[in-house]
Length: 268
Image 1 (spheres, one colour):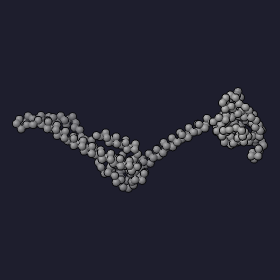
Image 2 (cartoon, rainbow, N blue to C red; image 1 turned 90 degrees about the horizontal axis):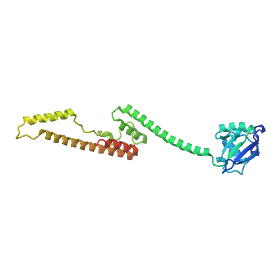
Image 3 (cartoon, helix red, strand yellow; image 1 turned 90 degrees about the vertical axis):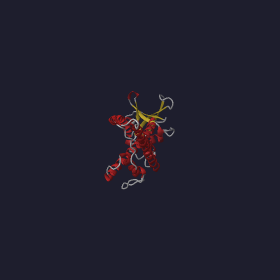
Image 4 (cartoon, one colour; image 1 turned 60 degrees about the horizontal axis):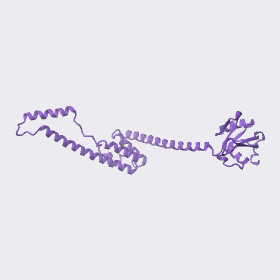
């Protein structure tokens, strides 16, 4: 064929026998004899040549190809390296086989592309995390450990999305507010000391002017605890509002907002 005149005659396969498998019954096939078949460097070139020599066949681009050795053992040609190995056997007179049904390797490649897409997403997440950690280190170098780690993380994320700068603390209430603190709980020793002090006062004070000191102390403790809880609740609500503002600005994601909110709600 004129398209293959560029090849030297000694490079051509004088005869290439191809078993074309039946699309429905794989054990059935018909042999096609192709003369003066050109060499091919890639699987794509091989399939292009097969289309020219056998124009009546359909789906050659997506077909499976291979070769048959002794004892009818079939080998598949999937890569260009496989093809070069195959040509050594084809030159020695072994037959080639061709399955015109859709190639299994095509499905494998499609599955492989999905895996690679997943790997790309994971790689993107890793790169972002590395970027955030690098920004945090730079912020600590410039400003010292003046803020807790989670605030440095938020600051770094805001820098990455362009809503803050490295030089100035973000103008967001969260960075000015004190973190919510848990109310102080009395230790067992302190409780016993309080009870002992109350009992002593009960014996020392006259009966007429006496009100059970333990009851008074208990009421005072209850009032102080209520005040602490109210103050804590106010602090937590303020910080949750600040987190919501950061989410709206795009500094943190919805998932990060929910996770940080749960941590703060544990203080209530």
